[in-house]
Amino acid sequence: QVLSIMINPVRIDSGRLDPETNLSSWGTLPLAPEQIVTVEPAEEQGVALSLGLEADSWGFKMGSTPIGFKDSNLIGELSWRNSSLTNQLSFTLERDAIRESALSYSGYEDPVSGIRWGSVLRSGARMELTWPRGNEGVIGRLAGYHYDGKEVAQNDQLELLAGYYRNSIRHDNPRIDG
Image (cartoon, rainbow, N blue to C red; front, side, top):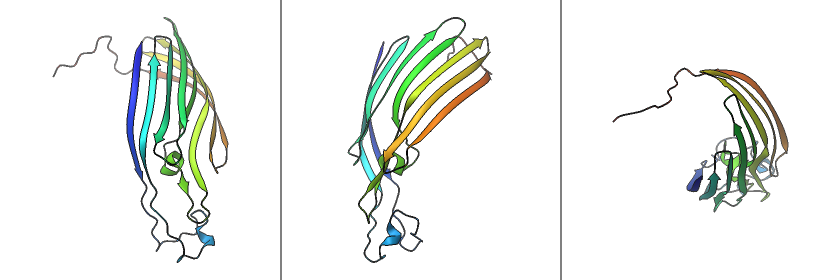
């Protein structure tokens, strides 16, 4: 069994809106006179925490998006896998933050309305089956996810994948000397 503890300091700075540019597509700014609105930089900092335990056939991880962000959320993962000589089957339940942008990860407050939006989470399940045959194999995956956040449209994702892979380099006992 492997115990993991993660303490990850996070700082996000997406900069400041330039008042000389066209702000007509940013939140509710088109509704307010430009001279009244002060747009603060989108900056957040905090510490993401995670505790995990992994064994041969299962894994568990629980943590949080950065504590110190205005919106902090619980995230986690529970997984089970069965490996045999002929295939590997795995199931995973997960809830995780979307980190592709400052808005999706930490959220942002509209300077006119005061409404916070963003902080998007993905929750769902995944099943994966692989059939290795020497240096090549076949893989199949079925997954379903639900996306939800503050003041953002909910969305769903269904993933179906089938594929073939070939290992170009494979060594049973790799060794690197320095």
